Structures are given as C-alpha cells and as structure tokens.
Length: 176
Image 1 (cartoon, rainbow, N blue to C red):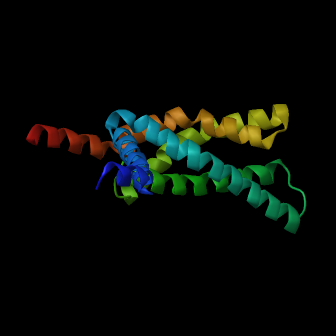
Image 2: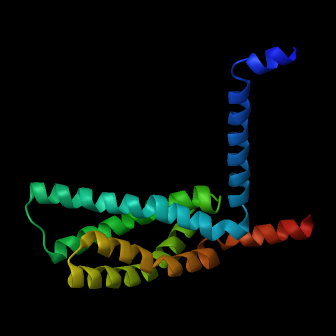
C-alpha cells in the first residue's frame, strides 16, 4: 500500500477512532471496578437508575390510582410511598449485586439490605413528609427523601450486606 492509498482509503480513520472510543470505555470501566470507586458505583446505581426509577414508579402508581379511584390523601400517598420504597429496594439490591459489588444475591444479603433499608426508611420518610408538608411538592420530597438515607444505607451495606467481598479480597491478597 502506498501513501496515496493510505490517505484515500475510506474507513481507516473511522475504525481507528471507533477503536479509541472502545479503548477509552474499557479504561473507564476498569477504573470504576476498583474498590476505591465503590462509592461512585453505588451512587451511579442508586442515583442514576434507582432514584429516577422510583420517581417514575411512584408517579405511575399515583396516576393509575387517581384515574381509577379518584383523588388521594396523605395516608394513600404514604402507603404508595412505602410500596414504592420496597419495589425500589428490590430493584436496587439486584443492581448492586450485579454491578456495584459483583456478588450473587442471597437471602442473607437481602435480609441485610432490608435492615439497611429500614434505617434509611426512617430517615427517608421523615425527610419526605417534612418536605411534603412544608412545600407540598411531592417530587421535591422524593428527591430529599431518597438523598437523606443514602449515607446510612451505603455504610450499612458496605459493613454488613456485602462484607464478604472485602474478606475474600483480603484472603486473596494474603494468598497471592
């Protein structure tokens, strides 16, 4: 191949730029897979997927209820919020097992996730109701509610729910 063919051959630049993008994505993924990046993976899973998913889910439940039954009051709103919380917990648990900690879901881990969620629930529910009663804006209350229990939930899950990974990594480092 001569210089003219190199500069006139279509697609070579496209292939190399595509390869560079793929390499960049691989490096980014490898960077996120370190234990140091665990809070980032947790925040991505909970914040980018979990919170918007829970917001859309609650609004869909309220919309359906309102069109089938009629208006809803505080008790109904809180009942749907609790149902939404449980469904979000199950969804996030599966995502955290698959992506954040790279571990198989087990019943023991799910029980621990519920303990973490109950602690976060108390914090979330208080923040949710304070914002609803002071502003009347349910969407704002959802965001404050979800964000307020995040630290507790992450800490407990790191210490109890997914503690086996840290033990396994420590054993592998000693053995290796």
